[in-house]
Image (tube, rainbow, N blue to C red; front, side):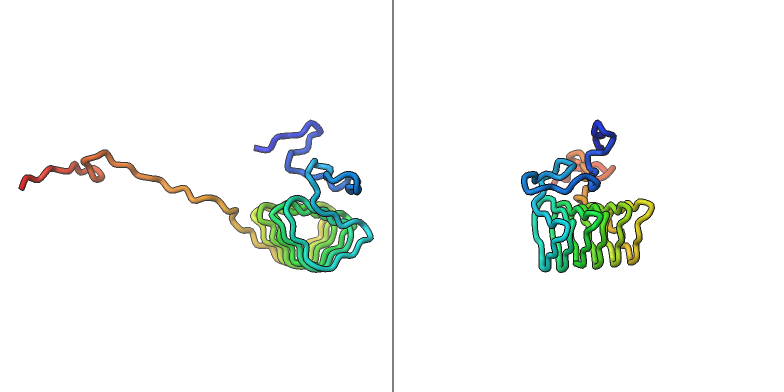
Length: 163
């Protein structure tokens, strides 16, 4: 299901330990295009809505909305309502969080608030204060179609009635 990279990491893993992207580099360490970047020392107040990957290493207050990936660096401080596809966090998030696909909490992350996600992984050393709601991932409903041979209903053959 997940292909392993040559360095032993799975293809869905993101490396937040590496350097943050510069203005010349718009790709994260995992090779994902970074759509937005809030750097260390930057304070942003407002709403971020985006497609793709965003990395936060500074301070953000407000809301974050995406179907993509949210990378929260170790020195990031987020006070917001967060909705994302996948969240990988090493920093601090205060507020309600909804990860539609999965959420990964890596040490020394601090979470204060409610989390809703179908899949959660927490490393040793993470501080989690809040609630957790595990929801079922959205999957298409598969229905079995029962086929009957022509001229029968269930196990009873139909008879032709003359009249």
